[in-house]
Image 1 (cartoon, helix red, strand yellow):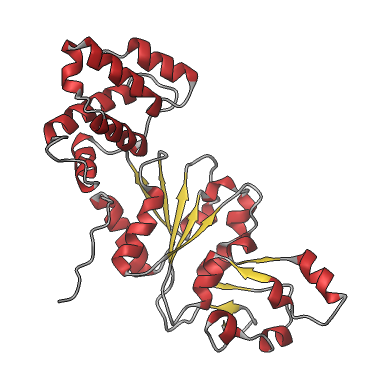
Image 2: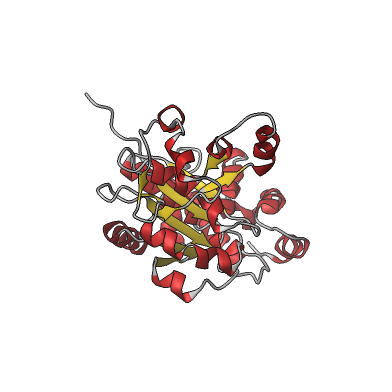
Length: 304
């Protein structure tokens, strides 16, 4: 009997599922925003699990250029070696997430995650308009003869890349497009022209019921840590988030906090009547606060 696919520990809300379905159906990038820790990045890995493929991840930096999403060129090594022998510049090219996905089109469909796209300058997003729409890119350091003389089969398992009419390496139009997931923490406004080419969804912070479901799919609940204990801890967590903190703890911090509560057998339901348990729980607030002021506030002011 064939092995059943193991469930992936991620619980997208119905709106996010619907947005992903629309993006997949139309072949559009999906731009996802939300608080840190709400599962923006994990969405890409959940989709890859559903599609039985892999994630190619690009971590955007403040210095990122649009071509970095496709390839990186080691100019220094190329210059050094070219003094000794004639070399193909493609030997000094390292293909990055979207470049690798385009090269693989027709053989494998990847999920491409462009994480924190708003970290880069507006030029980064503007310069990707053509590439995202056409799924094509040009290696400016290489001539057509370099492309023809490169051993693509040995390096990438393909006979030769697909090329469009302008000589750009392009996606195989007969194959499904790579799945493009872009995440943003909304630190900068993205250009309108870029936004028009994306499907969009904002992940709201989960409510108590959804948080309990998240705890459940992560395998927290057992005889040692019951559903009632988890619900009480989630209730306290919700109060903490509304306690006027400068940086609200996210889902990832909640899971880490519940993990330590479970390991130490600390039930928040008993904290109001047991000063020792209350003190032990307060000592775990280091997992929830991310600066001196918030830690002091939680430790001194929060009431069970």
